Length: 246
Image (cartoon, rainbow, N blue to C red; front, side):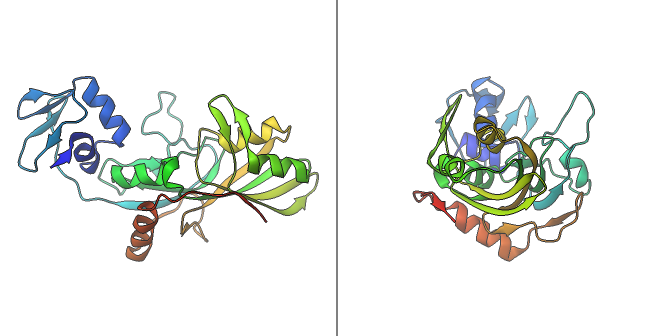
């Protein structure tokens, strides 16, 4: 028997955290009885409903998308701005993004209805690395880069990069390759702003072993069987992560 939040996530209802919120709100029932206990377990033969609608297991899908700037990582926007999920209209399942990129950022997104895998890829304790190319105003000093590796204080606590490499100059700006093993909201932009370096462009090029490669902006493709196997193997680990300078 699976925990109820895991069962709902596997059925494509949403992430485990979102499913927990549904349970607490009394919107989930098992065999006609509303349940709000997060420790509840459910058997495959039991009838589970959310808001009165039956929950049925979906086939898991895994898509890679190259998100351009100007697209949102949400399933609904009242202002009707472009959404990343609009780039994969062929998907019939209700999918959500694995690790959001803000509207001004671009690059690799994973879209899936596999809530358990999404949770493992994004939760900091699993330490799955995300790689970014970042164009910053000015020239970060060696001390700036050291601070990014040892920790910068934000409102939710201390955050740090796992790896940083200075790539090249572009006019009065500098390209950096930054690897994170966490991924808080707008983390890179906020870290660099603390050091007085504005991010001019931010592009995610990899999540773990999955790379964007030459996929054009606005294009998408399904993950290969080998990529999915590699990603699941990576997500199963939760080893301590140490920072390094290149």
